[in-house]
Length: 578
Image (cartoon, rainbow, N blue to C red):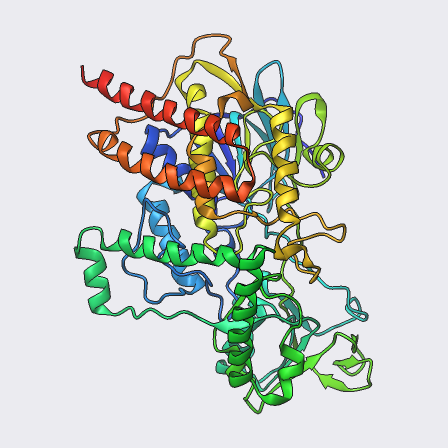
């Protein structure tokens, strides 16, 4: 692939790669906190929205309650249901982007190829390519954000006969309007969250026959229900704090799911009780002939749970067939336009839908990131850390002024990814505040802090349900878990609430800048919130310390650092008004 060598054609203080949930959150928070607009976002697709623009397959929807799957600064009281569709989430994202005039700061169909740290200039040099024309250019920035997410590259299974197959094949993440299922014999390959949404949806779209080929099993549980009607919308819109109260309630309920991850007594008992409940539900809803093919034997929680979107009841349909391929592998027979199993059965097929998920871990797909000394971030992860890992799930030593939103170990498994996004973005803005003020040029996490954090995190993950060997996409074959966060989202919020400055190196600016940005006045809210923050931190500190296994001295250090920052914020507020 051609990499441009010409001088930088553009410069902005901040550059972001990816215009999905993370990119929109970053741009929005910069405006809210600093009135900052010197940012540009590049997106390789034709529109913003990220995963909710890409995933437009039949039945695509969120499996996290909408009250949490939204930004804290742009809460939406007008969701039409508890688990909104992809189309509704995309419309919500568009409304937030429009509110902050994001379109003016975005370039679409632009793919980032390489990002290289320029030590002399203390900048990042990003090489880009127009996806349609092949035109190349470079863009320099002081601070670089990767907002591409972790579930990007479709996982295409290696099925014998695929290369010779002449029929229609589409991956769920590459769905397009031209794909029609009406009157067709459709084969769905896969049995995860996506397949569970597609199967009932294409039955409703009048597919003539649906044959699902499933190699693995998953726990499929009853989806939670909360009535949303005109009265609900009115209350959430007009009653002060009603929307925030609902969001907090959903957050607390979701956080209770953390107990299923532990391998301790509480975790084991909780999983045993939950498994009884879920298995009973699956036996009740699914046809008896499929029970052995559907109900897993591994620990519940080891794989991503599936909120039933009507999948189990759809298996009763006379034009649906479920084939277990765990010990009965399939191959494609182009001569007869059919899928054959090792047992000899043949299934004529007009359309194959690959509901096989994404390659993981696959951070920074298609992008070569070169830090100090020209070392690539992938070499750094594999050779220096043992696998993909980052300090606070976002930064690495040797890669100054570079932040990965939804980076290694960002997913909590029991709550909303949007909350993790906001936590990382808010943390990054705290770290780069002296850069925006003009007093510092470079921020970089220390090597020992990065390594200690990754070691502690991997050790904690070894004592979770994800390490029990179910073969989930959370872990690699070697057992390295680069996807999951072992503690609660409340704990992650606490980790992101304050910057442990002793873990960072702040390099002073070489020369004065003509343009600087300062955090907005926080108004009378700051003194009022201090007490609430202190109370919340006290609880979070105790929970966080127990979950992460940090020492009392470390806990004191974090808390003192946090209280110091709160005190400085209050003093700044007082100083601005004197």
